[in-house]
Length: 269
Length: 86
Ligand SMILES: Nc1ncnc2c1ncn2[C@@H]1O[C@H](COP(=O)(O)OP(=O)(O)O)[C@@H](O)[C@H]1O
Ligand SMILES: [Mg+2]
Image (cartoon, rainbow over all chains, first blue to last red; front, side):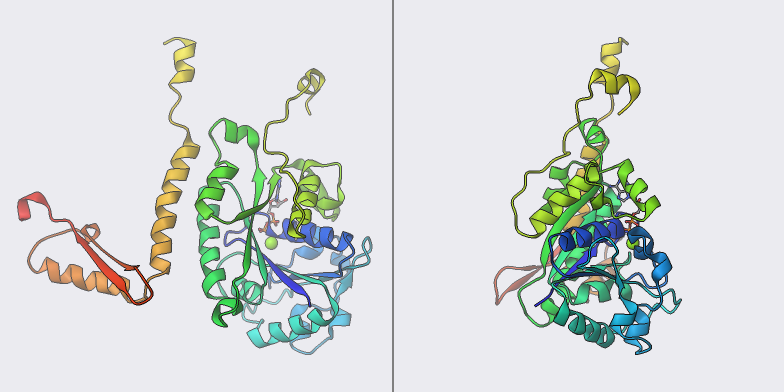
């Protein structure tokens, strides 16, 4: 039975797509058959982050409308053969996704895949609701910043009241906190909420902390999920995150300011 | 002012201000989420009734519904009266 994981946040630009790409790729690297679905209808972007934008022929909405089948619409990753991407449609019709349509596609995917990762759009409108409705687990992507934390709390409210699991009285969605764009230097200076602060306010289990990193921009420039840059801080932080998501216990890294050596201090690190 | 004083007097750090503000607003919004949809209207109605007798501001009335057990919820009504209008 496939596990459906939604990557969500409420607020835009916090790192949902970056995280969906990294986590989906990381799970697939472990040998699990994984598909990442872009739910951001009208603002397709997962394809760019995954580096498969030129290979999009059909999209999620085409499949829902019966204009193409899943085999035609899914893009097989060229690096990891257990990884697939289902791109979002560029239609301007925000209501192109129906609950019945989404459910039908998810059921079909569940026959074949171990993990289904849903990259949610921002907001709390129908697109975001559709992405989280069928989830078994949720990765709540949050930046250490007031509006992001507040929006995450609103999404937590939706997960526990507006989801299929809530409506059918099933056990609730398993919620994970993923803190991204973390800058330990600014935390120490008292300029940024700490991981403890955010954890205390949202009161859900911490899944990972991804540092603010140049590697993320480099990765998106080249269309490679950052988790494949295994030498980078963000890449390693996502590897740890995936391990925890799969139930392993991994100590947290990149929470403290790295002591710079003399050479690094002179030449920049 | 010496340099040392300057560093000591740097304003209260903004992260702790952010944390305090978030704790308050998040608690408030969670409370709202878990209460029935009619509560804001109930609050406005109560405000209107009280205003027939005393002139009070919008934020002087607060209504909350606290679930104290499976069978029992308590409607809590808080009205602050200005001193000179008792
Ligand atoms: N850990 C990080 N360090 C630096 N930049 C990041 C990090 N995570 C995300 N970003 C940048 O933030 C922007 C928004 O990320 P994205 O994943 O598209 O967010 P969302 O899908 O939530 O809108 C992108 O420009 C991305 O490169
Ligand atoms: Mg996105």
